[in-house]
View 1 (cartoon, helix red, strand yellow):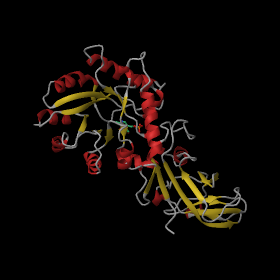
View 2: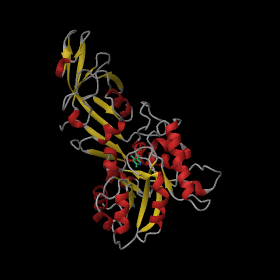
View 3: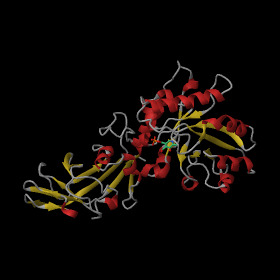
View 4: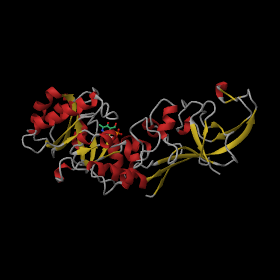
Length: 375
Ligand SMILES: Cc1ncc(COP(=O)(O)O)c(C=O)c1O
């Protein structure tokens, strides 16, 4: 029997979550005018947050009309796997030679600093590029300043190397849409979009990531850019339980490979950090940090065995972890263990490890192959 670890990705769940994101963007902001419908791209960078970018792109073929990745390498890998959907490079080009393949590969490109803008303006292209001009409205990570936006926008609009421009920004606190920081970023961006628009029709614009798609409809633009919600994970890290309409796509399971009794006062695992306070039954599960389970998860982290929660006991090892199953009935060798998935939220496990569901799924190693269902 192979090592019993499994990482299953439900592609129907991803399609469902995409439909949900799209339906939120399709809520009309002002009356029924179709002009107000936001289009939804699928952010599938970092191997679709660990879920498999090629499989995700295939699952969304015919649904998502734009995909977003971080680098040309990620885009090339999709093209080599016959994904034809246009792709946006979220960090733009890392060197000017990448500009010459944008058209061949059907790529759109973010321009986030003056260096990238100069390179585009001064290069010679066979076909003009579709560009996304990124404005720094407060995240202070990427983007040109709002003060430079008008002049830069006009320069790009007049360049023979530019076919179209979308104005974009990125929120620092969209998971707290009532926070003044979020409101100020949204207002500054919206005012800039209005300032650059010459008619009543706003110029193409994009700001909303998952949290804003779900909770700040006022920030929905021409394009919304959800990532984490497509995988069925709430962008609100305090939400351990499932947000009703989202279906988790990744299921991380293993099995019990050993069971033992320990006496009160005996410890479990490296560093002897967990000690039994009563005679206890310890189940050893074939999953550890080498499989993507966070080593930082503390004793007490919920683990689901046969559909019931039991607490992690002691430190997580490379290939194994231990669970105190004293309170569960009829636990046997070979029983199913859900580490996270449809019943146990990855955000809940992440909280016990002082991190986010985002990090846990994205850094899943390829040691255990992804099994794709509902392709
Ligand atoms: C520029 C940009 N847009 C959209 C997203 C998607 O964000 P989320 O996964 O929170 O929806 C990201 C992800 O970090 C991003 O960097």
